[in-house]
Each structure stands twice: as structure tokens, then as C-alpha cells.
Image (tube, rainbow, N blue to C red; front, side, top):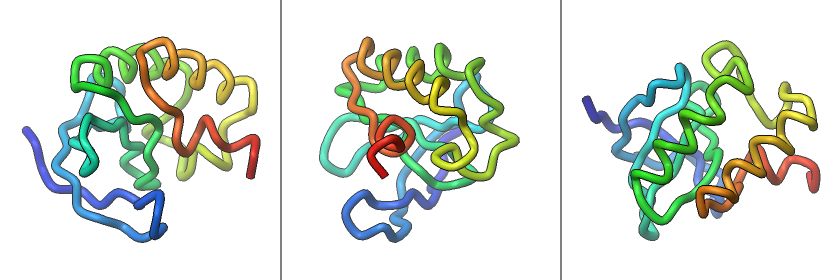
Length: 109
């Protein structure tokens, strides 16, 4: 069931409301991006994991990256995930036509 959740804006770094639904991967939600397309959101940290052209790609990607981390148990994937996991996640995000936003960009921070 969709609900409105807070998601950190890439521009302002402040939470903005996004309509999203939980995925089969605990802790990951898929929502509608304000600029078009869809996003995967790490619910606990409110961070965007990737941005996709459509919901089908976002959901398929969420299912594939779900087993790579304890999404439901980690507070912030940008801090707690090992770089190897981030590299795998980034590769899968790109394979589904997405752009890595928070997790994939961690190495440059």
C-alpha cells in the first residue's frame, strides 16, 4: 500500500515527501521521483539508492540488491556498507538503467 514517506533531497539535503511502496526487499521502498521516473529509497536513512526511468526497473533492481545488505537493519547505507557491496549495488543499479545516487556515490564523499 503506498504511503507518503520523507526522502532526503539530493539538492537541499532536506526531507521531501514522496509517495512510495515497500518492496520485497525489507527496508527498501520504490517511490515516484519529482523530476520523473522512480527511485529506490532506503527507508530508515531516507536516502535514495538509485533513480530509474520507470517503476518496473526500480522494483527489479530493488529485488536484486536486496540480498546484498541488511537494508532493514542498517541506519545509513552510505556509512555502514562496505565499499565492495557499494560497488556491486552500483553495478546492478546501472544494469537496470538507473543512476546511483547515495550509496553508489559514497566513494567520492
